[in-house]
Length: 363
Image (cartoon, rainbow, N blue to C red; front, side, top):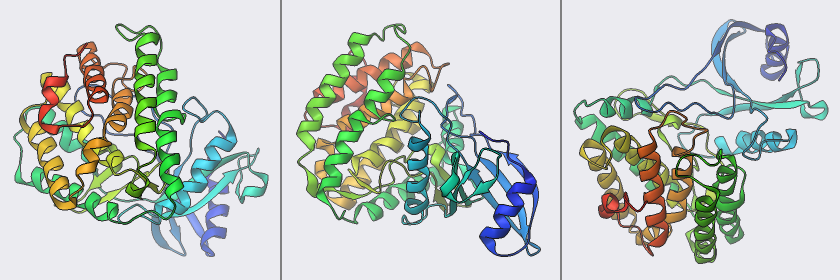
């Protein structure tokens, strides 16, 4: 990745905004650490750019994606992500705005795409605290507040709203289910990334999980009537809260349209993940949030079918959370419980939120 030059950045921003730009600061951004296992792997290196346009202060975030596994090996892989992000971010309510998509040349100049060596994305900088901080506070034993309940309700109602928008092309649902298995960022890409053997995790175990997920692909691929607007990566690191229940979402991923279970399992799966690290089961504040979220979503959407589609999406999230690459310091007992939950959920015809704790000891 070329070095980010202040002077070259000023030339690019001046052309973008059509007015003189002065860059005043470049600040590397890092994800907040929750209590428990730290998330130690990420796809890119965001930099906050503070600048003035004609004397008026502005701030933006310049995002890149690193070469690596999960389907990001080639420049064209990374370019596809950035080009999609630029349009898709601005099409979703409450999502941070994308200002431009561009590229670096071999000398590190920022320019249009014709002579691209590597792509970048420029998005608005939004103030706020990651929802992961609320999760960390509860993990550390602090009491559940009324604000915690209100925020969970607001996050649920947001999904109810965006999931009310039907998708335009049934084929996009089939593609989304196919990519849930085969995409480099999803189930098979994650299985390929596991260093093996790793404790109880063997190649045979991962192969068996893939086999179960293929069965789910054929079970779901025809349910194209369920195609809805989705975020696609709705987890606590991608939600920024300000005062009260005012929030912005970041980094929607893998397509504008998909299965609503993708978003609901992403957030509620993280409630489970945090609770397993804190107590070895789904309990206390996290059980309250988990059950409240599912109950509210089902009541407000009337979508009982989501319980029949959730399993492979939970498998995807569990493979991330149990990953020795993403969470190398995670206690082995938590990995085992995540795999147990995954296998039990894949084996059941329908997800039952009230029976999570009975599915944690299958291994």
